[in-house]
Structure formats: C-alpha cells, structure tokens
Amino acid sequence: MKDKVVVITGGATGIGYALAKTFGADGAKIVIAEPREHRMEEACEMLGELGVDARWTVCDVTDLESVEKLAHFTWGQHGRCDVLINNAGIGLREKRLPDTPMEDAHRIMDVNFWGVWRGCRVFGNRMKEQGSPAMIYNTGSENSFFCASTGAAYIASKHAVLGLTEMFRQQVPNYITVGLIIPGWVASELNPQFNEHVMPADDFAAIIYPQIKAGERFVVSHAYNVVRIDERMDALRAAYAKYAPRYEGDEEYDVKVLVGRLKDRGLI
Image (cartoon, rainbow, N blue to C red; front, side, top):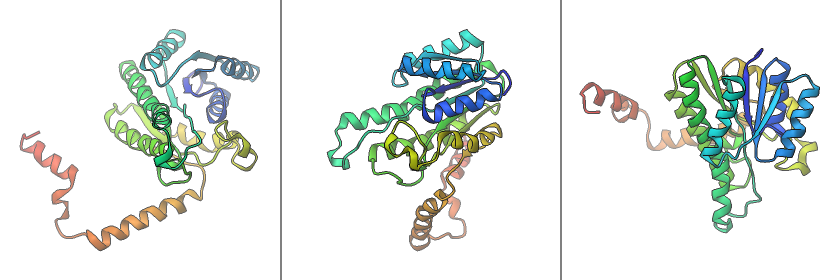
C-alpha cells in the first residue's frame, strides 16, 4: 500500500479510524471524511503523530453533491484514489417495526444504504476513468446475513448493502475489486456502553486488513457467525427440499440461463 491513496468515509472513529491507522502504517495516504470536523481534526492529528499522511474533508454521504466534492478533494490532493472504504453508518435505538418513526427508518437507510450507493456511483465512475487497479469495499455487517440485532431498519439496510455490493462487483471493469466487509460486534460509538465486551476495533482491523489486500470478495472476522448463517441456509435448503426439489432440467426457469437464451435469440 506504499503511497496508495485510501479514502474512508466515517473514518474518524471506530472501524474507520482503525483501518486508517492500519492502511497508514503500511504506507498509504489517507483521506477521512464525515460531517464532524472536530473529530476528523483529532483523528488526523493522531494519525500524523503515527507518521501517517492523513487529510480530512467534510462529507455527508446522504448528499450526492457532498460525495462528489469528496472525490474532487481526493483527486485534487492526490490526483487519484486507489481504495475507497464506504464505511459511514449509523444505528438508532429502534422500536418494534410498527412503532419505529418513518423518519428514523428513512434516515438509517439514507446513510447505511444510499450512502454506500452514492460512494460506489461517484468513485466507481472516477476509478473507471482512472483506468488503474483500484478497490471499493463496502462495510456491511453480520446483519447482512442474519438478524444479529433487533433493529429492522438497520438490518434491512445491511441486507441491502450485501445485494448492492454483489451486483456492483459484476458491473465494474475487472481492474476494480469490489467486496463486502462483514463486521460482527466491534467497539465503536454506535453502542459505546458495551465496548469493553466486544471486539476492539484495532483487533478487527488486523484481522480484515490482509483480506482486503488480497482482494477477497467477503472480508470476515467473527468466527461464530457461520453458525447463525447456517441456521438460515439450513432452513432455506429444507424448504427447497420439501417444496421445490431438484429435477432433471430444472435450469429451465433459472434467470441467468433464461437471459442467456434470450440474448442468443436476440430478444434482449
């Protein structure tokens, strides 16, 4: 990562800051972005004391123009971007789904999902024009695969980030790597009262950093997650075995197979 330019949204605290330290220690030039100027100033000062080239700019990922300004700042400062970590995210104290105020649900989706969408859109286009190897990693969650928490909007937002990431990775040129970071419960400002009980952010960054450098599709950490994932997958496989078992020629209605056939016939 020597002299690579790494942009991290939500980079002043928690997972974002831990990744900024880890990339920076490996020689990367860091740009952190979020709305809180004082937190970014503090983060960049601490990164500077560690010998990291770190700069900051205000960015609200709920605003497309603000994300475009982040890209303009990055290219203006460094002339390029090699890695984008779409990490900005929020969590609110959600009530039962029917009791959750719609403005709260929309706010969570706007930051956690649409914020990632905007980052992929703006930086994806710039990286495509740049034409050199680059990476975009989106911060999902164990909640992208099962319900680890109780907030419906939060869980829905992280499930949505999984789908976005999987589709986006099929749409970019092969010199752009797209992947999903899948944290379990990591110390952050989302639930600071529990931080002494959960995985420290620096430990998490140390686990996932080699995976990012290797260009892995899924970047994982909390080993027990596979038990929860298997619970859902086992229930899904059981449903198929009972009500839609495999049969000879069952690919006849498979979407990808059908699309291929329709393309061959010039229908799409």
